[in-house]
Length: 424
Image 1 (tube, rainbow, N blue to C red):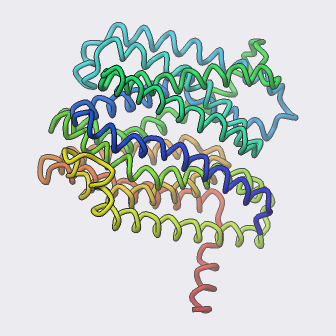
Image 2: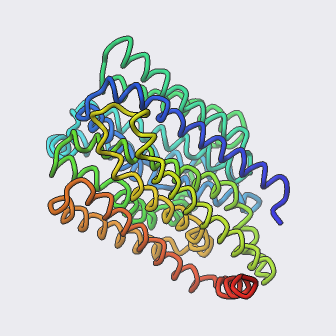
Image 3: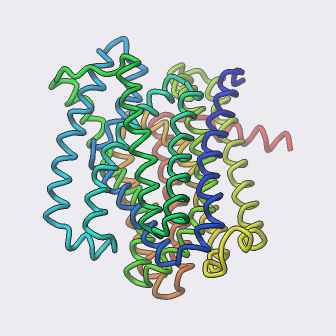
């Protein structure tokens, strides 16, 4: 069985993400009555740009840092972290230059002014530092400090946003400043924490840089595919239907995001145990992994269905009347997030086998499915078409990752299902 420490970690990670998720939900009744759907659409586009730039600043090597923590006896771990910062510095300068040169088409695509595109580069770079610190906390199973940084970011974001939007009437810009402030303040705190904890040594190493890039570079298509899955719908909505419709869709996404945050919390808590259990290659342990996986899958579906059923009743309380159309989208997005959470569980096995390139191919393929379906359905059935496309793409993502994980490290899913069938 999962020991008490893991159960405490599950609770802390879940509570942390619940608190972080509660901040946007607490803001929702206020912001949707102060900001217009157009304002909310711009906020959505800024979130997308930070995510997009974040895939390029640092080249996703924060994941390598989290994995190398388990092998820190074989590496000079602080030096490894320091070399990840070298990668961050180089990639951030290159990205800043590219945005400066190509700002005009980027402005047309994202609907963001040049100034905010430039700010997004800096924010995404600092976010990388925060992600490194969170990855180390997660690998060390240190849910308490993880909570301090995660909730701290959400609190700064919410407080600054509310003050600037309500007291200074800065509308969408106030919200963007709040989002940036949360990342910047906690990102700099994360940098200080890394140094104070002895996790940072800036001694260049070609071997460590290449090792980190070997992990991170194959993940770039994976991250870009994830963006196609998670954000291309909003880009298409903004360019095909309008920024206001993007704001309405964003409200539905924020409410459905609770499923993702629950899944992410459980995954952060269980994945270290899961990786250690996979190394044992013991059938009894494998059976336990599958049983927990099935309980996790059923739990996600139950929560998603509950969120979808409650949406028509709860939404009028949460948001202003201009965003009422979101209700019809929430159940589709919630189910899509449930399949995304199931994908987390099986993708850990793919990461364990270091088959990130294969995973990238799956993510890109499913992202393209989402993009293609969204483009067609948005023009056929309107806004709900984006949510339908998202759900279909997430189902394909889970099924594809499940098949690949079984080829790489078979688990006795059929045996457990047959036992449950006989017992029932």
